[in-house]
Image 1: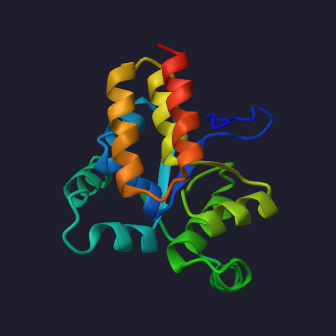
Image 2: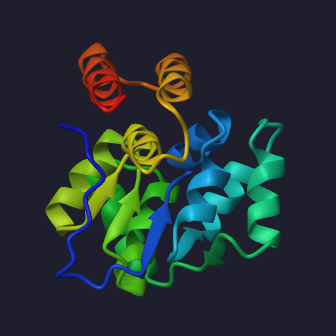
Length: 179
C-alpha cells in the first residue's frame, strides 16, 4: 500500500528530492502545492539542480522559481567517496547518489525518489522514501486537491512515469476510497 509515511521517532525536519520525483511532480502541477504546504526544509543537491534545470523541460521555470524564492534549498553533497560508493553499489546515477548522500549529511530521514535502485538504497540505508504517487495521494488526503483532480493527475503520472499497472490501480483505489 502506498502511503506517505513519517516516523516521528526521527528528526523529520526535511525532505531531499532527486531529479525524477521533482520533474514528475512539476509536470503534474503538484510540486509547488506540496512545497508550499510542507512545513519543513525541502532540499536538493547541486547535481539534481543541474539535472532538472538544464535542457528545455517544461518544469524548469517552476523549479528555478522555487529555488529563487527559497522554497527549495540547493546544497552541496560533500562526501565524494560515498557518492561514488553509492553509484557502484546500487547502480544509480550521480543525482540519486548525491540526493542520498545529502540526506545522510543533513540527517534527513525522507527521500523523494521514484528510482527503483535509489529506493533499494534507501531501504538498505534505513532512510524513508516517498514517491510522486505517494505525494499525490497525500496531497489529496490533506484536501489540497479534490478526488477528480487527483485521478487526472494520477493518469498523467501513469503516462509520464514508469509505474506498474498494479501501483496505478492501488493509488486509484486509495483516492476513490477517500472521496
